[in-house]
Amino acid sequence: MRIEQPCVALALVAMLSVTGLSAEGHGPTSESARLELLLQAVASAPHKFILGDEACTAAECATHLQTFMTKKLSQRQVNVNGLIAGLDEHANEFKLLIEIAPERRIEVRDWLRGVAAGIDAARPAVSAEKMRELIKQLGNEDFNTRENATLELMKLGRPARELLEREQKETRDAEVKVRCGLVLGGIEERGKTALYVLEYIEASGLQFHRGRASGSWHTAKSFGEHLRTKAALQGCSLASPGKEFVEKIASSSFLNGTEYKVKLAGGETLSMREWLNKELKLGLDAALKP
Image (cartoon, rainbow, N blue to C red):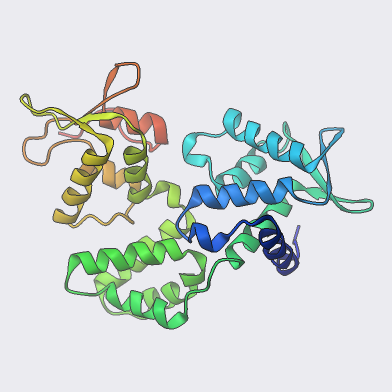
């Protein structure tokens, strides 16, 4: 069902100004902030919601959505796109409707697509000139310049997609073509990128070991810094697929092949490969390739 997204966008901008929320304040990079804005838009909606056969308020609907995410979604899916996809997947067992007008009800997941578009529209626009400059930097001789431009474009999201698709089609620069493809893939499925895996590690608060017999355990922050440096030295973009990042960077030492380890909150120790595969559902083989 097609939702009139411009109307939703205008309504959401007004709602943000009234409640004191700000898409600009969160910036274009924060998926958690985007989800928070979505849930607050639900809780503030002047509509009636229906879960199964029972009516519920907007605030109760927001609570139902939070419970749904906790029970039905993996941590990787706890974002706006993951929530909408999860509601699609579990539509038969979790039927949630919104009455947007008298005698007119639609699925909440369809309405949420319009709300998400409104959140994105409320963000400060980045000029086409700025996006073209970033795309130009994808072919820079310096790796860090190329990488920074790649990640900035991925964070900009869908507004950059048209220019990226055109550049990917027209450019003769193989590096630019590849990086355009990485950015486009990251825009569509950020939860499957190397950057997402790295940020997941850094936010875990766990301890990590680089496998050396005389080595010590590292904090999540210092281990993340190590992986960032290693990725840069090996020319692995953080816009690349997360599975590739784990295979090449986050599983083991480049020098001696020793597996990296993670110590869980309860004291259990797992290989990084096993832990990330379990947490993020990356579809990795059970063991390291020889």
